[in-house]
Image (cartoon, rainbow, N blue to C red; front, side, top):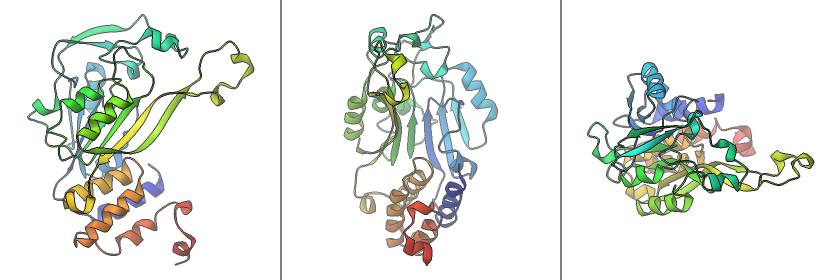
Length: 297
């Protein structure tokens, strides 16, 4: 978290008072890097419910957890006997086997490793877990199983304001759903695409790699992270808590301060936020995000 991010978040948290902690579910909560909601967790504004089927990765999460974190050593998906394909590189572990032909077509057949092990398991669905409350935000990075999580969590997600999910544009795993499949399901559950946090592309294989700069010839979209938000009239359909949680997520999880300002406007109209909050919030934007008139004021 940068200085601007921390100061912006402090302005919001000092002015907005939700009636409860924000319930954030992280499916595939690997401890490989700091999660985007870390600031909200550090401030005691959110409770994290994480799922990590790998016993080793789960142990790391469970050993370091705070009072605002609950982790389950479970895989999330549709129920039934399944196989988890555990890759030596944790980021490739999936309920789906890697697709050799699809990877060969983009020159990535080397991602298939002879040290991949198969672990039998029975996934759980979000809706069947009594310990899991209704969710405000869902974050997923599951290497292909995201659609199963959505279809098994319709009830838990019915009041959620945002979903942050990995999406695939080019197949990596056999029979995995692609971006269009997730987009249809999320729209059916009342969400709309808000933004892409990033996309990753790869170079198509050819016999002239020594004559080109690889990083400047990555034309094939592979995957990325997408943000979906509730598709509704925010000022009418969302409660005060939902507006506050969407503002906090927009500010701290997926960098959409304009969406945060929209939520703040609706809260001010209801008398649920101070009228001077937008000005104080904007004062902590980066210089290129503020108009000159605001800087001179």
